[in-house]
Length: 185
Image 1 (cartoon, rainbow, N blue to C red):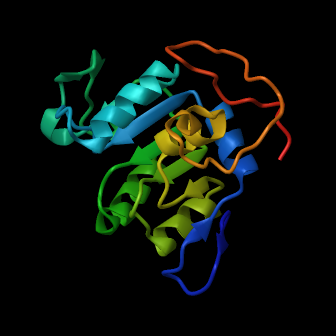
Image 2: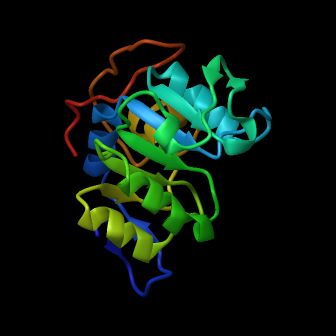
């Protein structure tokens, strides 16, 4: 697996900042499975945040297919998304992951990354995706990781575990420093 396990199968997974930064720097197109139109749902504000950071995000939710969330058309399934997908971000429970991996592996071209949100983990399904050549991240949120690695999360007094003496370069978007690709680990 692309993560380092710290014990048995239920132990927390540890991903390097280099890996997370690389993924968030290279990915442009994201399919967000489990997108919600309800503003209080985490999938809604992750969608909003990723759009604000310049990602091309396609909401996927069969119950909302054909509707719009934040100006983006909602699709019933991954096969309906009209563009090649770099990353699939999953806001569904762990039991749904094997079926989602089946759907992901049927795509051509194959996405580069399968990202399972906080508390979502399925080691067997992740192993299948990795065997097909995908990078898998489990039990993490790209919004949190982007904010942590860009330094934005530190504005709120949160320890981001990222220190640099270099002045951040302002990127596109409201108060966006973006990911500083030149920052050494």
